[in-house]
Length: 404
Image (cartoon, rainbow, N blue to C red):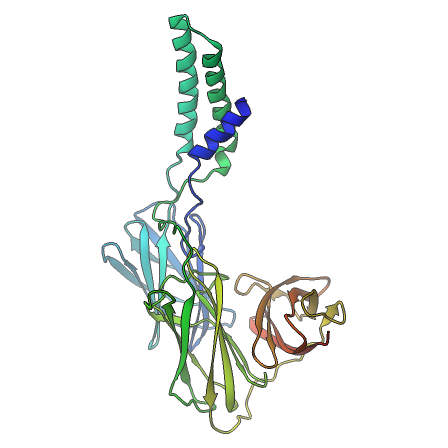
């Protein structure tokens, strides 16, 4: 009976799950990868444990670069802001902040600006110590009151024992019962609806070899308002994959948030034809979503297109079956660096462009990356394994035939 009472006691007192800000908990660094014209940069916002504080922001990149970034952190609570600058690979800059809650980090690289929403979180006050002390106090009052009144009955002893049991359980579990952080957003009662997506290019008809801007506009499926609650997952608010229809060209980039519900990235492609675009993202307190679009590129094929080293993957089973998992091992050259929080990434697209899968790999036996995924139906699939090594991003294409 004491155990049942203790469990019920915990269930009543336990708060809802820890509120998170862009899938980053209190006490963790925020890492956001963005693709600028000058290259891909990961902004690292170091955690803080109290406010006021100096928010330390640094910039990292796979490719060595001396790009300078102008920074401004702005509070959405009172409008206060502070500015600074940082160079990729150099010491972080310190930006003063005065309180917890919603902020924006404005990042300028030349004429490009990305606005990254985030929350400043600090560890909250621990409520469990007070509850534990209260349980011991209640048990003591019950016992002392029973002795003084001469009514130390069995129910009073049972209630006091249950309070002691609950206090002991809380004492044991207290290290694993985190307090809600200060500055967290309220937890949504229901998941958010899917977003509607529209891709566009500027100019409308890009030319081979020339820079163009690919823009993705997201609106809420129920209200039509801009979707501005994307969660950082695998170190980016959105992962954008662009491939030529024949699979000869691949771009895996991370667009800039230029306005609420608007993501944009500058690209160049070496060959004309139809291109397919896919964006992966998650909304706060909701699930992931994949949206797609297409655009046309005109002009003559460029002769200076990068040449990738084709992979000769090892499949287990050797003949994959639609609907059943298959493990793919791809050999790597040189020590693998973490990229987007993982050792490797595998992008798989059906030849007709209907299906796209993005799998994450782990180091396998020897010098190889191992990916496990399921092909949805029979057919020919185009695949690109990507990993970072020796300061560069390596892309290794191959194809897989699923015949049954």
